[in-house]
Length: 138
Image 1: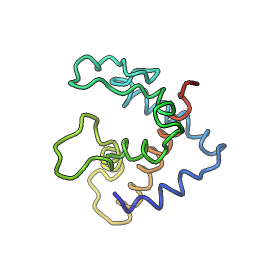
Image 2: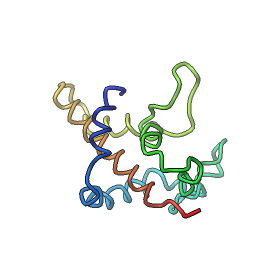
Image 3: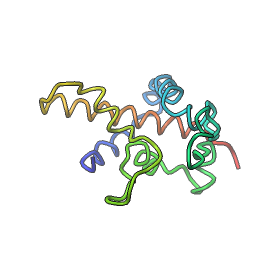
C-alpha cells in the first residue's frame, strides 16, 4: 500500500470542482460504511458505537485536534496504512483493502489489480474530502 503514496499526492491535488463531483459518492460511502460507527453527522454516535470497545472518533473536530485538516493522516487511517506492523488489530475496518477487493473480485491480472487500487485510492480521497467538509469551526 505504501506504493500508493505518489498516487495519493496526485489525488489530493485534484481541483475542488472535480472533488465536488465525487462528494455525493463520498457522502453515500460515508453513510453506508462510516455512519454505523461515527454517526450520520460524524460525531462518533452511530447506531453501532455503543457496541464497540472504543468510542468512535468525532470526525467533525479533526481540524481542531490537529490545527489544520490532516488529509494525509485521514487517508492513511481510512486506507489502513497507519496500523503499526505486529501490534495487534485496530478497531476500524481497513477500507482500502475492502475497496480493492470489491473492484478486483475474483480477477487476478495485474492490470485489474492496479485499476482496483486506483479506484480504492479515488474513493478514499473522496472520503477524505468529505470528512474535511464536515469540520466544525473552533
